[in-house]
Image (cartoon, rainbow over all chains, first blue to last red; front, top):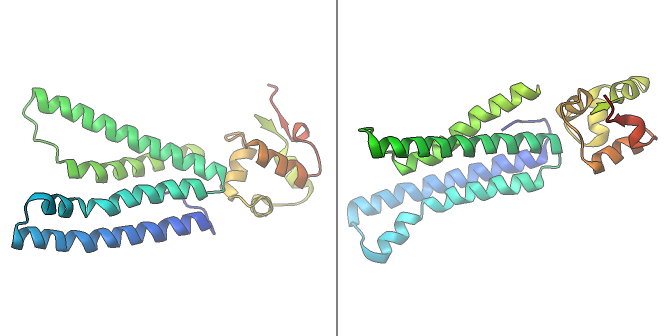
Length: 134
Length: 64
């Protein structure tokens, strides 16, 4: 995130993002415990398995809300560039890795790593965008 | 796009932060517009023109 001082949209973004992360942690721990101790099956298992993903979807909504609420068009423009860099980097990684998996002996890419990889690419992209515009 | 923001700002002895506060944008935005790295939207250009009591064409120029 390219931060500017006294930016209400960014303050709301960080608050909402923190809430989504707390909800994620609050759902993930009991979900793991339930699967370890009770081994649910059928529809219940599917429902429970999806539960921790919901706050992750919520984080994406939080990003969308931030972009809609950010009044500073230059900052919004830089954030969009950083997010596009993150999306591009993630797509490039999974595409290249997919072909490597098909034709070589590389280990299978854990799908759960794609989302944190996206934020990693957003972070890198943010640094590049910031350096270009400082 | 070339602009006269730095001159107009200097005439009023405003810092970039002063102008940013009046425009309700970040200082980075003012700097990016001033240095020609970022072209403002039409609403922001109108806001600038109103603030400096002039026209958009008197601030911005798309020539050379």
